[in-house]
Length: 394
Image (cartoon, rainbow, N blue to C red):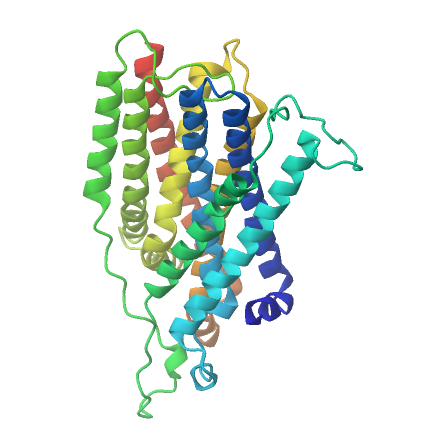
């Protein structure tokens, strides 16, 4: 009940982010129900049904990542003075954030169920009733228990991941003021962030993934893991190699972002470059991981277009829906993480205002950070995509 009260009184942007989480959950729930409908309508193709279900875990992972990012930026989950006195300590706030995430995802799952039943023709009296009965295998009865189990995957996974992420979030401590400084404890700059240590491991995984893909893609090109939606077969080694490459990009992202901040401060930096570099080094862990995931997804899209984009194999509607979900959720996660970083640097902004720094300096530093990340990560995305598609196009 408290989660619902806080949701009703939240800022419109916070409500919009929660609605986006519900929409993503609805999309994943619809894909899961489509996999269930295919299994019911084609009992002789059990292997294909299992593979369709396995492919649904890619948008499921992207949705859970987005839900965690939204939970981290929710103002109601941030510890504030006075909340512990009314019983809302860090543990209670973590539970509250997990419940709020579960409510948003459950709402999306219920919308997915209603939409699925409506397109199958099980619910009558509405426009487009039974419009996709053939695609959704409406001839086979839908077991409600199995549908509810599949729909519960997104709320349970997202709520658990949000609780773990917020529980592991460090709580900033303030030093008692001894009167020797004019700054309040809240306005004092935080301690410098430690450099990320995942860059060597990330580079190793990227290299190993590309090597596995190049080595195991030799042969007739047949696969035990065919892509759904008319994309044909893909060698299983390619998929395993690409999974390693994607994990490597996610691990290397924070280290690369940290190095970008170091490069901005090289060779006698001015005030804007120094500010941009220091803030980017502090934000490296927060935005580097989502940025690496976005690079992995864009690399997969570029490689898939190089393989299938000019051929006669069309993208099916469910494949397109899954691709839109993955692209949208990963991009929204990156934007949400950037918003979280901006919220955590309000003390720096107040300090600059007290020093008389113009607002244009902060905007210039923000633009410089964005340009630096694009200059580093865009060529990396293109290079990984070309190397991933090379074994299959050669």
